[in-house]
Length: 113
Length: 117
Image 1: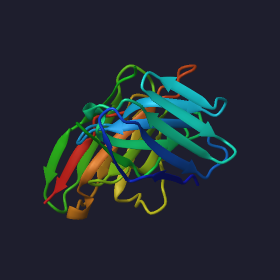
Image 2: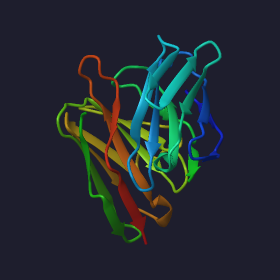
Image 3: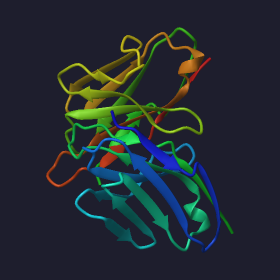
Image 4: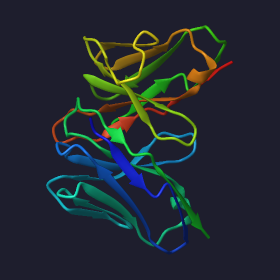
């Protein structure tokens, strides 16, 4: 089955700096890669996703890149703000309504004012 | 976006009792729902895939007789933790994908915090 790894497990950055989180996946059939932000005690919230037919996607301060050959994908947050502090999870799945989504272990991001 | 609700949000029970958690898709029909368990400071671990009208598919290591899943309608899946023990205390979250054309985003319920005394 699919296995998703994520690094680093914790990340601390100064406000205004960039943060990068990297993930790898094992199942070459995976073709949908969402990123979730989870605040303490709350549900995961989708912040951006990318499908295997593109290599990069950007939404304001957030961007995701995908390297299908290497089975790597990364989240980039620019101009970080204290409210970006949370746990971020990458995930991978096949893009059908009945295919499960497998999560990475998570990255705890702290943005220091 | 689509809405998934979960009930109850919190439950405290005594060891040995059973607890039922409901997951509902409010504005779409979900033939498939997913149940996750999340321990403190850990990731979401998929427990099982709930299939409407058929048996759930459990992940390796998850006891199907302990975590009973019923998906009797296109908008409701239930997870029953039977004979709960303190080690079952966790955050249980359901999710569903909106199957409408062009939508593959997974929507999560708000979660249920289970505490077994």
